[in-house]
Length: 281
Image (cartoon, rainbow, N blue to C red):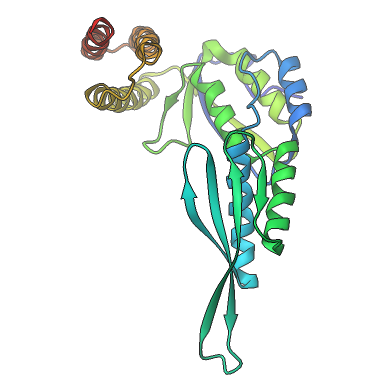
């Protein structure tokens, strides 16, 4: 496959703007795991998550079931189970009144990943079929999360406030080529790599995006620390590792984009001290 990167262009490249399209991608889990292993990428393929597969199946059937006079309603959720009610909708002969009959309960076991129904129902059959399909295939949600994780490990910068377009430095060009080659093997997957030349205007735009992105992360961390969201020692230690990685990113991008990252580094150091204090309490 011809490379989308700009290695042979002779132009000095700062990095790449990246986005992707996943249109009806249907990828076998085993096949994807095999291709990821062969690709040279370090990020393992997304694991099968029964709860995600179940909720995806419910969402898919829910949109179709309503047009067939079937309602699927959330009833109960805890660490052990998630229960939905299957309700039939009836219209009287004069088409003046609606009636609803709770026909069955759909139960998902959060521990075993098994689903069952209290009484046979056509909606359950459709959900079970979709759930079993999700066991075999990676869905679009999982694939998007996996791509984001790959790019996050390459120090991506979110160019748009709500995400969707990202910047990755040219030093990761080989990894981007590996990711592009991998996704191009699967129908419905397309990765856009748009080279950005090394000039003052580009640097300024990416610097603004990087600073805004990091400040947003810092605010989230500050709220998490204040709320003591991470109660275990491992949770706080993971947060320390994140601070270390972010400080390394600040150092790299401050030099690369030629801006003063001292204030950002100071904020991260302050948060790091707070977390270390939590570990000694």
